[in-house]
Amino acid sequence: MRIKTLTILSVLLLFLACKQEAENSDNTEIEQDHTQLVTEQDVSKLKYIEYALDSKTEDVIKDWAEYDQLEQLVADIKKGDLKFFRDNEKVVLLLIKELKQSIPEALNSPSIIARLLVLETKILKLESLANLSTTTKDELLDTIKEFFVAYYTLTFQMNKKIEFDNRSIERPE
Image 1 (tube, rainbow, N blue to C red):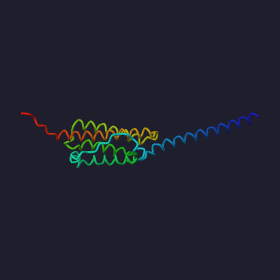
Image 2 (spheres, rainbow, N blue to C red):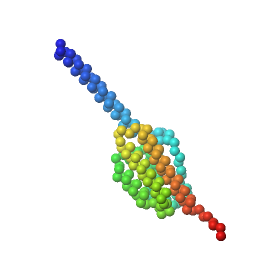
Image 3 (cartoon, rainbow, N blue to C red):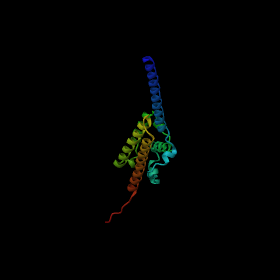
């Protein structure tokens, strides 16, 4: 009698343990899918203000290749493509380093350097979240929005710097 009872309890415990294990693996797969499923439609639903480069600013940065790479990165992220960040830490750090070192002389000011520092922080945050398996879709989208805000703030600040430098104020004699 005791052997039957023990056998039945053992079988029940085995089934319960298997069921819990299966549920846990399903949850893990769902979490990983959320980080992989950031689509162009998800990114397009984000609310932020976009600033375009002024023609005078474009003339100043025409030889700034690292900024062109940054623009390409922004275009890729808008398409939902985060491949640049996947297990690519050295390239991300190199882009940030070269971006700061090769600032055109006309833009080399504390305000631009401060915006680049903020942008660097957001790039590193996005890179770390893109590589975490526990990142949720909402966290990733919030970080993408923060990155876009930092990028467009840099663009706005560059436009303002060039506009301010090109102003000619006549002083009364």
